[in-house]
Length: 151
Image 1 (cartoon, one colour):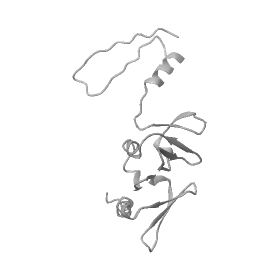
Image 2 (cartoon, one colour):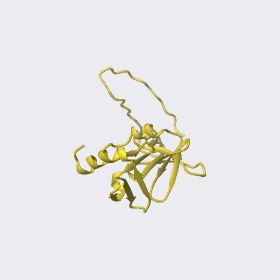
Image 3 (cartoon, helix red, strand yellow):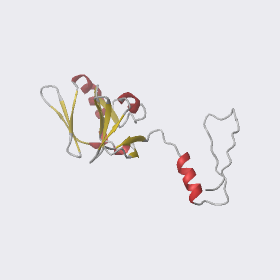
Image 4 (cartoon, helix red, strand yellow):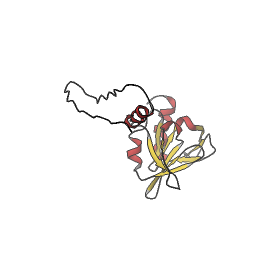
């Protein structure tokens, strides 16, 4: 491993954090450092049933639901559990693509195959991967507004 010098400079004119990596060349050590410095607040860290930790993009998410003391994040063919609240996950999601359909679930509208508004006033949501969810009655007006583009 190469020696790394770290220096802090205060600049009150900045409203962001700026990081510059200076090296003789871009080798595997520089690439590793850059990957560790890259931070995307929208990425979500999850673990599978074997405890393997992985970072996922919200683009991969079909829906998110509360399951007891954990929150399940469902992708096309896999379900991950995280020990985070639904609200804390909702804060990093794009509100133009994700909508809360009940107190316990958030869906990615880009992963929906069809919406089935029944005569009884309920809403069944079928995803492209074949799974389904049901919206609470009180969330249906917000879902209708979002789908019509009036929100």
